[in-house]
Amino acid sequence: MIKTDILIIGAGPTGLFTVFEAGLLKLRCHLIDALPQPGGQCSEIYPKKPIYDIPAYPEILAGELTEKLLEQCKQFQPGFTLGERADTIDAQEDGTFIVTTNRGTKHQAPVVAIAGGLGSFEPRKPPIPDIANFEDKGVEYMIREPEVYRDKNVVIAGGGDSALDWSIFLTDVAKSVTLIHRRNEFRGALDSVDKVQELKNEGKITLITPAEVKGIIGNDHVTGVEVHQSGEAPFVLETDHFIPLFGLAPKLGPIANWGLEIEKNAIKVNNALDYQTNIPGIYAIGDVNTYPGKLKLILCGFHEATLMCQSAYKRIHPDKKYVMKYTTVGGVQGFDGTKKEAPKAVVKKIE
Image 1 (cartoon, one colour):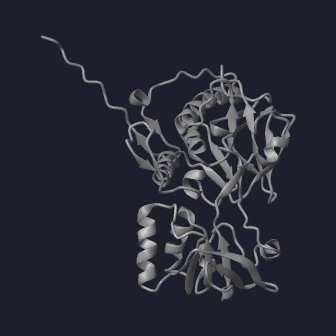
Image 2: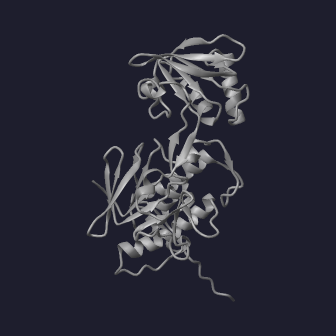
Image 3: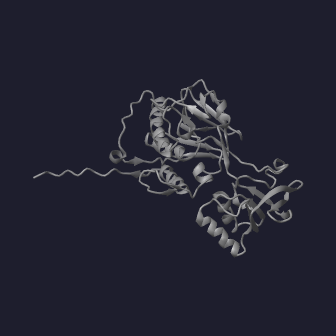
């Protein structure tokens, strides 16, 4: 049983910033995310996409924003359960909640903050006959551990950032990398497209366009894929792994069965106070919630996380009075022993 003060469902930007705001209140956090790494959409779907509305950053890449948020909150030592989906929640007599993942990992906390963005992400699967029979047998929709592909023949399908970035990365790991896309044009970052072209010219990546994988070959494990290329006869390409990276489809998932008020695939909250749901102790912040005037912006998620943490403190410590201090006055004391001192006031007599 993993115990914490605030259990955060979702490790995207809003969830990560919650760790920092909770840490200022001496509250510990643990995060659950179905993705294999923190960052949510920013890491998984568009890590190299520029964001222009983060305060103090005229422009910042989505992946870089994740890195900055992780750096900011690491002093408060958050725990992570990654690659697992929050499935069930059970209220306890002592006022806490137990959240169990699809892999049976149990977490207990007096406060649950749902920061799941647009929901849990399910991979978009290509319409290939019997592809489900090869899942985890050579067909993977996400790359969790690159070493699995060490000295293997790998075929990646897709035309976005994930397909491009992993094709580039695996050239130093796999025996061979083939990238297949149904168009000649790619929709990823220009520097990634240029890098793939460079690696193709060097013979380190095989690029097949416009083409699609229409079939899987193998018995107990993938041994090849059937490729249909425009203007050519279909052919079989031998491979050990087929990785279709067509993005992720957001779904509210099992959270929709938790007894929360749902409106248009979002969780209704009380925005007049603290973004609490209809169940006391369960909050929803970021893109996953809805209320009159809601804007689905990262900036708004940060604001909601801040107010939610203040309410969470009162719930966890009902007999304590918290007096807010600006970080410019009180500094920041991390759980790891580090402390960033606030600047000392300078007193000077006016002559």
